[in-house]
Structure formats: C-alpha cells, structure tokens
Length: 252
Ligand SMILES: Nc1ncnc2c1ncn2[C@@H]1O[C@H](COP(=O)(O)OP(=O)(O)OP(=O)(O)O)[C@@H](O)[C@H]1O
Ligand SMILES: [Mg+2]
Image (cartoon, rainbow, N blue to C red):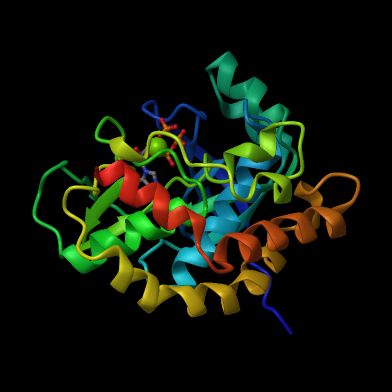
C-alpha cells in the first residue's frame, strides 16, 4: 500500500513569494506548518504540480534532500482576506487540492560556484537529466542551503514535454536542452558513478513516486497519465541510457 501525500488545510495566505514565476505563496495550515504553495489555477496548471510530485518524490527516493511535499486544501473563502486582486484571482481559481512544500525558514539560495561534494553534484545532474528538468541553471539554481545541507526545490519544469501534443513516452529518447547551463555541471564528479549509484534505485522508485500524485490533477484518465509517466521513466532508465550521452555532450 503506497502512502498518499499528507494533507493539510490552508488557514491563511501569508504572503506571495514574488520571485517565483508560478506565483507561489507562503501558506499557513491547520497543522501550524508553513508551506510554499503552488496553486493549480496558476499559469502552468495542474501539470506543473504533477511534475513537482513525480520528480520530488523520485529525488527523495534517491536520497536527494527535498522538503516534504503535501497536499494543501484551499477554500476559496481565503481570497476574501487578500488585498491583491491577482492573488485573489489565483486563490479563487484553485479550490481544493494544491501542492505545498515544507517551508525552510531562513534558507539561503545556493550561490553558483559555491563548493559542493562532486558526487552530490553528479547525482543532481544525473537526476535532472533523467526527469528532463531544465530549471536548475546558473540564473535560477532552484537549490537552497539550509541546515548545512543543499535542498532541491521547484520541479515544476521537469517532464516539460508533457506540455506538448505527443505522449511523454514517445519523447523518452529526445535530448534534454539547456543541459550545458546546468548550475552543477562543472562541479559534478563522475556521471558513470552517479549512474551506478542511482540507476536501479530510480527504477524501483518510479511506481511509488507516480502513485503519490493525487488523481484530481491527472485529467480525465488518471490511469493512462500515470502509465505514460511510468513508461517514459522506464524507457529512459533502460539500457543503453541515451540521456547519459546528453550529459557527456553538454560537458564537451
Ligand atoms: N521550501 C522552501 N523553503 C524556503 N523557501 C522556498 C521554498 N521553496 C521555494 N522557496 C523560495 O521561493 C522561491 C520560489 O519558489 P519556486 O522556485 O519553487 O517557484 P517558481 O514559481 O517555480 O519559481 P521560478 O519558476 O521563478 O524558478 C524560491 O526561489 C525560494 O526563494
Ligand atoms: Mg524556482
């Protein structure tokens, strides 16, 4: 039996995190926790939330630090207390289940070029290439430093080809763009060793990561969407792993 994501109910919209392109907000919930919340009514819609969960839970299964992900239940009445009309609209467009990430208070952004364990950097590059996450660049590292560790956040752009008109599975061997701009590419140690560390773990974690996505975000046929994600990942993890060539190529 696979544990679903924990659910909390939003009690207060605290503030907007202005730097985020998807208008994430800091939300307080009924468990007294604070969550960086991504709303299903935002620009990229529920698909971005699906990407966050599949990638985030997969990363966690690989031992990469990702703050806890939860479902944040939102009542549109929350909008009434919000002065900003843009935020009001966002809340009103997002009743029900939204995605929360445990807020790490006082976390600092990772500074590109700061020292990092080469094996960890290689694991993160390997992982991002597997899930086609194009959003961990020098300009926008989406890594936080908190409690002497590096934390991975913001996987909404992973599986970016889900927004196209083909199934993800049909795109499994297409190359990952922008890899040469990955913030940890230069710091990464051996990708072959990362592959040895992570390959079979990833394969056995695929089903569980996908199962954790709430069905409400998966459109009219959640079963086939889950199957598409699963076969995309299983294809990419099959041998030969074409995505390793993408990394080699980006490293020049
Ligand atoms: N768990 C967290 N703890 C503390 N701060 C966070 C957390 N998650 C996100 N943030 C802060 O909020 C910002 C926006 O979050 P995130 O990157 O997930 O949103 P986004 O809209 O997808 O952003 P963008 O597309 O601009 O990268 C982050 O850059 C970071 O400063
Ligand atoms: Mg971000």
